[in-house]
Image 1 (tube, rainbow, N blue to C red):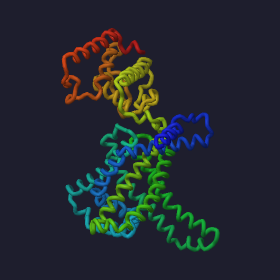
Image 2 (image 1 turned 90 degrees about the horizontal axis):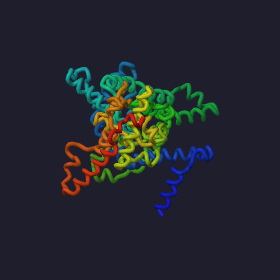
Image 3 (image 1 turned 90 degrees about the vertical axis):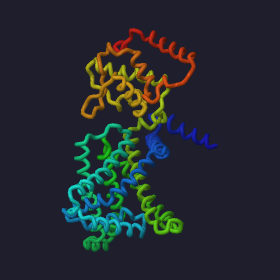
Image 4 (image 1 turned 45 degrees about the horizontal axis):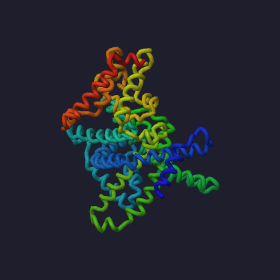
Length: 436
């Protein structure tokens, strides 16, 4: 029965021609495809591993980050918003969140940035930068981006996040607090229907501020151009998950007496770590939603396949080299990984296996500011078909594991040699120029 349900869902998602159905049905199908792809990423376990690694980095970097943020906020005169904002972030922990916030703030107060010295200050900045770098790496992984920013871009971007980010975040918290305590608003709220409208706006404001925060993160952190609509959609989903799961977390985890009974005084720290993990998992899930909304051609089942058969490797290598050589020969723009993936209808990670093998055998080179455009490494007449085939067949071979390392009998080696000779004879005299 389960197999039949799965088959029905698969047909509904992947065999529905969206151009032949109503707009509402097409919208629902696209939404289900995006949710399916994000759920597949989540079920695969890799997002969970990234979230776990961010838990460790967050615990290590939290106090230094808040110390730096406190110094920045003090210059703007809004440093008093540090503790209320931290409490609001840990609101799902209930009373335990207040206790943890007070303890963290006491650590920050005890850390005198001015008396750390040069070595201590460098270590403080390094710890904070490592957190931001870890976050960027997790976002790039979610967006299937292998090219990272250079050292100068990292420094400028990370510095902007560290200096400007806290100011915006805590200013938003201050706006919320002012909204709730304004005497003018209290007088207006006594008049209907303004009172109901202000009450509704007050309930809605935290959601809006959270969506804005997530949108900025999803738009700026990945090392690629993210459309505003993609970042906004991911932010909306992440905000809904954040609020709903936060409520469930409070009900089933924080109020549970089992953790206190088992872990005693360590229970509060265990719950705190669990919430950090859940929070990062929600953030990465929103990033996954943003990615698949912007790259809906990456949702299909075949786009999730990263393993290639020998026949597929060879055909894909020849196809890629033909496309790159054709544009090069006709003086047209060089291909990028994303463009090649779209043209061949093969996922970027799978295609990257072939491109890496072709670069390793010095058949391709990369160019451009981000080294993401591909060109032939030499004249087309000098690149033979046999060279391309060998590069595809030898993909992912290393010095530690090669075909020659397989212990076998002479008869098998003879058959392999006959096959290689047949391939060499069939491609004799044929070069990449013949494919253009």
